[in-house]
Figure 1 (spheres, rainbow, N blue to C red):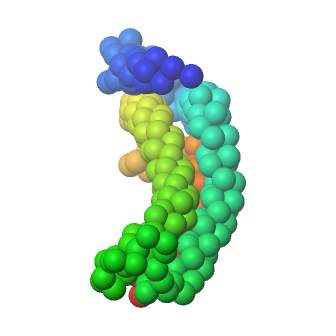
Figure 2: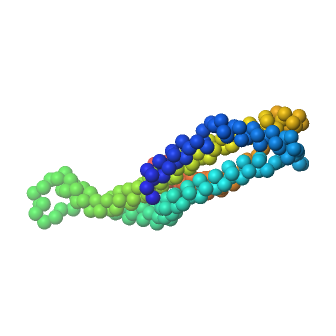
Figure 3: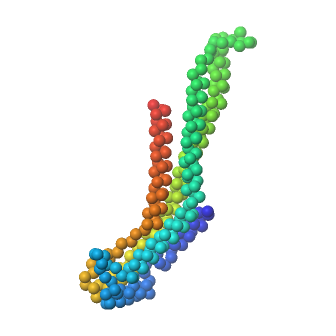
Length: 249
């Protein structure tokens, strides 16, 4: 998925006329709709909620737009979510490998080394020189084990970084999509304001502010899934930080 093109499409959505202030024709249309519904009693209060075909159309239009935006977002970021799941599954074996590598290194450190042991040809060396050679040999023998630990730590660190990099991309995409749906919501609310004020001329019982509820199940559903991934990543980061602190102590 070309995220640059996706970003440009979202910018285009923000710049569309329907996301800007109402035009004169649009205002006239909504004003006329409010006048007709108010005069003919087509705007009615049922169970404490004012309803009309125009209000329903505005709500349905907004929810359809949101469903389209979130559906497109889910499709665009499908590969990132798959990547995140794979990365999460990779963490466990990487941690196991790191623990095993550290244990091998710890066992190697625990082995006793006779620093006074002389090898053939070292008869003329002093005890200090012999001890220095045995220490160097010990360090050389430990290098493969240290290297294994370092490689395991890097693999785990790179995986964690990749998780949050991928999550950051999803976050940016979700935020931009949410901004688009919010601007369109504001647009529909402005349309309803014009409609409502026009209807009030014939319906004095109308409340001063429009009593219309907009829902966005598509955005909430995506947000719920997104939050679950975020919580999983944060839990993983806290767990690793806690383990690291225990090792330091």
